[in-house]
Length: 130
Image (cartoon, rainbow, N blue to C red; front, side, top):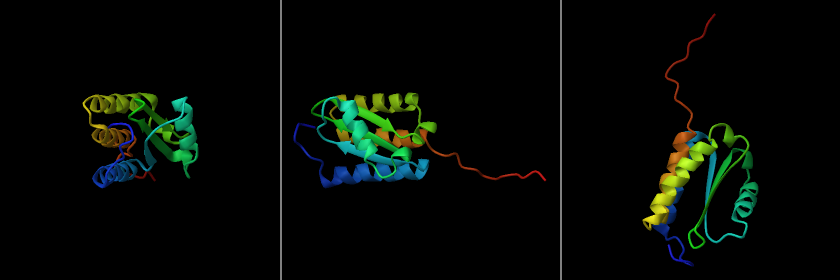
């Protein structure tokens, strides 16, 4: 995505749908920021994350295509179900798509991967001991 290019309606909707699915699967709040960042980028991403209404349960995916920057920031409670390894795997997946020129597809797949990694397992039944 060239510098200054904004996401169109279809791309925004794809990202929004990926966020909705990830949130349903995991119970976490996901946010995606696509745009320029301040240096140092990690601190900027952390400030954006801290400004979220439920930062403890939130995951922020920060992407600056022009600056070639990607950061994933997790809140205190989100870290319990989404560890650094899961985030690194999603980041590698996203970066592979970015290299192929597919920023939105990479973000969609990465958010979905994060949601799957953090998902709560379904319980088919429970047993109670008396």
